[in-house]
Length: 391
Image 1 (tube, rainbow, N blue to C red):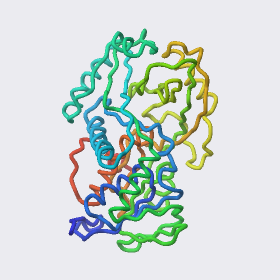
Image 2 (image 1 turned 45 degrees about the vertical axis):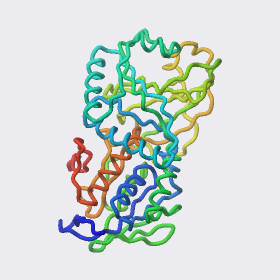
Image 3 (image 1 turned 90 degrees about the vertical axis):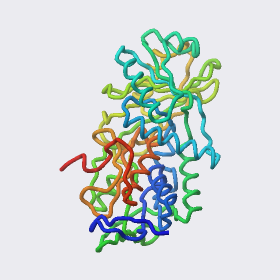
Image 4 (image 1 turned 120 degrees about the horizontal axis):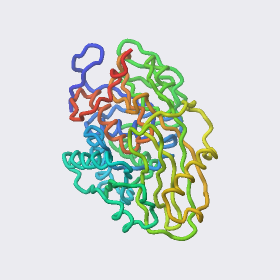
């Protein structure tokens, strides 16, 4: 099978390239997934630890389409299609608990109505707008006094990011790709059209290198002489032990994109336990080193979660804090991923910077990274190119 792929140096067609993907989180593995689905088999995925061990495995795993602009909805609708196929064809465990985005201002209702139009244009027709009374009737333990409406996706839900990574690793290996664990990239050199990567597991050569290194994408970019604007942000989640069982709670997001702050999210894990945390699509914190020790959430963040939950849940006085953990949102300055050819480094493709939404955006990021390598045009009406950052 010949695939018309265009050299990033000359622009002329070449046969299948050798591709090395650095990073076996969901972004790197979905890139390999898309490439192998198109028939490219000379693909090696290098992982410093093992698949899903980084940010992907620490995610709360939401997959939903309740966003407010058409481009944002479109890429998530593609992700929904891919996850539905993995659930159907590969027995991916997907909890369809629903996703509820809360709105506090009249302008939010207009935005929600527009979102439903965008979703229908993308083939998603199960989202609805609920009134405060609707919310109170379905979930009487949610405080609705300050709400004007909510947007609810009934199909939406969550996956285990670690399980997704392991599943994808198995699929791409079954298609002929190679996944190499404990293969940290130590150095990189390009001679002509060929990259030579020295790793802890030996030397790998390829015409195309994909930087999908999650929080370490900035470091990997420097090794490749292909810098990327990455702002790693430390975030966490915790379990909330309830005094008594509650009705099943969907994934509730008390945050509207573009608000300039963070908001609390929570969902049922069990009848007597919630998982909760703080989310924002924006890089509002100081960047951290990707090597920062990951452990329990800081007490200031835990206290903020509890404060916001006490304003949103009935009976909050009976809640107790359970365990907590932290991870890194690998974010860019404009809060959007980078997917496609690096502007200044021939042979380097980016698949990075989807922090906070990485699980749901990873199929689209992987598709755009693969499209670049394959020379395919994209139907996505979103600009995730590296060129958008200018000089």
